[in-house]
Image (cartoon, rainbow, N blue to C red):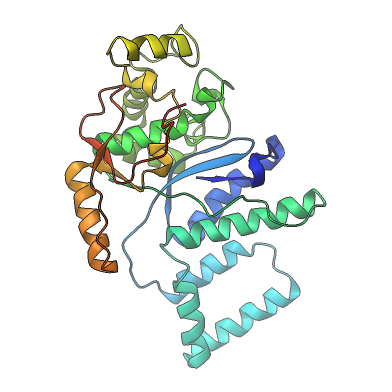
Length: 309
């Protein structure tokens, strides 16, 4: 997740559309899979699947280079010819170009850096402004890539437009992954199918809508969100919200929790972190607030209060 400077509401529908296209374009260039996303007026979320590192053939690197420069300048066109000649000779320049290109592939940090840079250039030029567009480095959470954990994170992202009271059903909000999937975008459908572990879109949609709305195939009659009165009453009485209701609350653990997954997954990531850095963090898997039945869902990092909104 990343937010605009000062949280300013800068993005109209035109800007959101450009950012939507850039999310998919840069993902194809970097070789990452967009699982789902949501774009709002002052921030966006994107859930991506990072492939295992593998050697990429020169032909594929050139294809991705051309993809990123679909309208090359004279310099870029000439540069591409030079690159192709160098690769044919496999000299030192070719080795260096291959190394630099490969460093941009299959890395969430490189993906977000390139995405934010390209969009910032377009936005500043289009709106006659200069300077930074984004408030800070993006916030990232490592998500366990299967089962209920992945489904919960994906649904939380797709429900951003519902929490913002823009629509009652995310399929009606053009700038989220689920709406694109419903409209027939095959790449978006593939992301939701991966989340649900289904192969057929009709079955996937049924499974995912039950997750979004709790039951049934349509939006709930009570409207987009839940009232603060209902939330406070349920918590005061020691009760729990249905998962579909809990996901309509702003839960900071989903953006600030560092690692999200089952207890065993979070503990494994903590061990790996300690081995890489030599640091002995005094932390461990932390349960989410008991407002809902989260199952085995835990996070690595606690968040400052209030954790809910």
